[in-house]
Every structure is written in C-alpha cells, then in structure tokens.
Length: 128
Image (tube, rainbow, N blue to C red; front, side, top):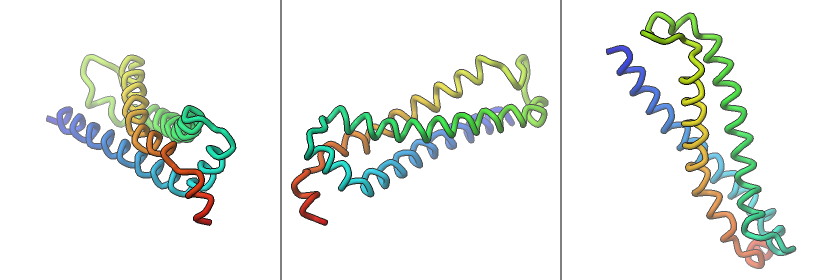
C-alpha cells in the first residue's frame, strides 16, 4: 500500500515538474521576445532559436537532476525500510528516474520552444 502511494505521488510530482518547466519556459520566452526578434532579424534560423530555448531548459533540468540526486542519496536511510529486494541507492532505479525526468522535461520544453521561432521580427522591433 505504501509503495503504491509513493508511486502515485511520484507520477504526480513528475507531472507537476513538467507543467512547471513548461510554464517557466513559456514565461522566459515571452520575456525574451525582443531578443528572439532581434536574433531572427539579423539572420538566426529556426534551429538557432530552438537550440537557445532548449539550452535554457537544459540548465533547469541539469540543476534539478543534480539537486534531486543529492537529496535522494541523502535520504536513503529514510526510505530504506520501505524497499524490498532492492537497495535505496540502486543504480538502475536512479538511472530510470533521471531518464524519465529528462524525457518528460524535453517534451515539456517543446511547446514553448516551437512557439518561439514564430515571432515576427518586424512586429517585435516595432512594439518597443
């Protein structure tokens, strides 16, 4: 029962992380509309703008993975009693969790990333 509840909470936490990353990146892209417009006006391609947004998302994800990995290893004594047939520092479980978070984060970053290159440079520069 405890493991099922922890699994449900883990899925909810993963969905909240995806929504949070999407929201933060959408806000960041909205704040950087002028910069993106200037970049596109001077010749940046769609790929350049996409890589800019995905690099920004990668920084968030890397910080989250490092912080989560550190806190997870620090709390192994607390959850060790809840685990059966595996250790708290099981490398396969940690690798699965990291890859799941990175995959969900990449999917969450797609919405703001693919919306960023649709900025009209002329209209953006006129707005200021």
